[in-house]
Image (cartoon, rainbow, N blue to C red; front, top):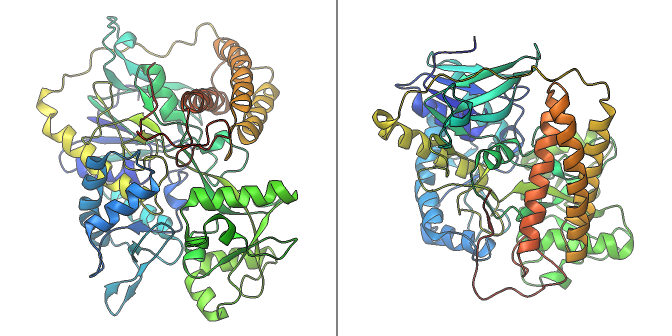
Length: 528
């Protein structure tokens, strides 16, 4: 089934990809590719919720202002307005799909998170993402025009240079993907392609991102000739569970929203008043994450304590059933004592540059969600704006493709994937070693607090590893691990390059060599 009969190819089965698929499938045949399982992306992991102006006392202007303040002025105002004004309609559509948002007396129950001036987060307990993922998947499975294909690792976009008749025009005609089960590479050709492949969190040792968040989409788009922007803006969540058995379990922002406090486990001191005396634990994430990082480094700690045990046990269990149950299984009772937490990489604010129609620089390629830089998040993402971006830009991509459908050319004949010169790998250990090395030096040198010297060290290592990996890639058959390693390395290179280019501290990018913030906010745009 190399030449499947579909109109649009979507890479990624999370909130952005499935939203686009459902909007397109009214009239078009859509193929959705997922790496691993259909629920393997970040959407299912989102605990907090979705931000939208739904409260009587709240306004679009308030939400816009909160988003711009969190984004440290790097946001593009027209994008922020576009997303926030479309938010209530997105929530309505999810309600129609059957997402069981929490309600109080019939109205949606709204919670509040750090950086928000009002209660505006709709949620399904503390497992919103899972409920959203499930509703979208059920709707997609029920739609005869949507084909869902899990177990596909995309390698590279198909462009004019892969045509039987070569063209250097950069037009995207789909993608080559490794079928994980058979080990063969197939071409998936389409008139329009939407990239919704998620972020690059797994470049880091500690991350709340799922295992598959290896920057594949961003690296593929870069190799095909698209610009990327603001990759240095890596968001670190202040509170990830510290547990050697369970990696990357997030303790949602809402625990602090409902009264959770941070303490130094050695001194017993509640320390946030030193860092942000007015907002304390409800300061934006970058401030809280740097405070936690500072306490950990200063006192040589493994973790800090997050404590909500002063609230009534019933209140805690009712608000955080998923977290409570998970922690009880690990012998931690959050109703009685503190939770050990560390900051961890959480969200990729930069990515492939897109406009309000979700168009990238490459003709035939649209993109939405965490793999993009749309201008919504700027230098720091406001809590619960991420799922929102997926819905609004997923819709925007679908609408733009439908609007210009008649002007899109039919794909030319495309060459099959060439593996005539490769053999099976004899040394998988090379991949594991490099993978571990990248994540460690990215955490130590390109983490929450940066210096030019540390960044240069990281750049030097990336250069050495790139030569090694490219040589390996050229000789051996592709595997998911090898594809991910190649993308992880490219994403890391883009992060380091962007960080070295920004000679100021703004939002998530904090460097000891340039602690001041410039008077003018500029995007870091890298051109391939």
